[in-house]
Length: 394
Length: 106
View (spheres, rainbow over the protein chains, first blue to last red):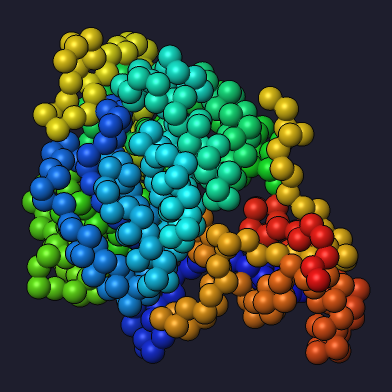
């Protein structure tokens, strides 16, 4: 323990036992899977990470299909499963799915809006072996939060469910999705996370693809807000060390370097959609012209991970154009986000414009500045009909 | 809001009895052929000595008992082992990955 290497490090890429050295230099065994159980959700947040074209309930994988998928995941070495959605608690079989994850040795996390949970169901989930709960919040109080989620009394319900989560002994992460219309509440959100006895707080600025791209004008922060946020987060991280871990995702239109999306395409994580599509990330379907395999097909998940065109297309560094190819950071950020590159440049193989080295960076920085100054605050809410404009009451 | 009402994380000394909470899983990963620690949203990779220390965390042993065991096994300087153990365990406790058993167990 006295040498220079830390006794406990974060996970680095590790190949399978028995792999030849150097054989799998660009990817390893997936660590974790995001299981989107459904796209149904009682909330209608305008930045939802689900695709614009959502999958309907009748297309969702059955309980038996998810259990078979989890058997396969455990077998290939996946360690963690994040049950997400939509709202995963919409599924009547959620407790059964968590129990199955526990039985096959998967560490399970519930990513939830919380509004449909009762204390009894939380206790059932805990008894089934659930390891962690992540609850999203839309603001620090009801007026802002319930407007963003378009769900009456949602905020109050979330606070109640967060308290129950700790009462049944589960660790809690608060996921605060931040944008121009709620960033002013960040100090109160941090206090709220402490008061709720959360272990972690994710201060996650909205990332702009899918629904959020559709709502970018209403969501994108001003540069002044970003600078203030940076200070608030840094101060809170220092003050709350050992009390609350704070993870911070900056809004990358204003960033210098792109984020290392999903730990690199097809390197550590993947996503399974409600109908069973195996995706390199939850937004990958926004990239048109790509084929994605399904767990309902005749291929194993291991085969899809190792061999499918979608997973191999942007894996490693070989696909990268300049300025990425000669960049010393290419194995740090893996060229940023492919979905963002597609959304902003029309080609997923281009450099992510979030990077200051991209020709387009100055342009998106300017666009963010202009759009945020225009203060067009009306949301287009997420729904199965392609969106509902705020104030046009249904 | 008053932060003093929050259940504070343990500050360890040699008499503390660290306990691994239910949501932290120390597990041998046969696919990758190594030990891992599963925690919310992360997978941690302990070195061999960290694994050995964590395997001794049962909520009954005091940190001093663990140091005594390791000192005998490795014929190393007990002060150094105590310092290293406290640093390792406190770091995990600060992140919420270790608790302290409140009362000595029977």
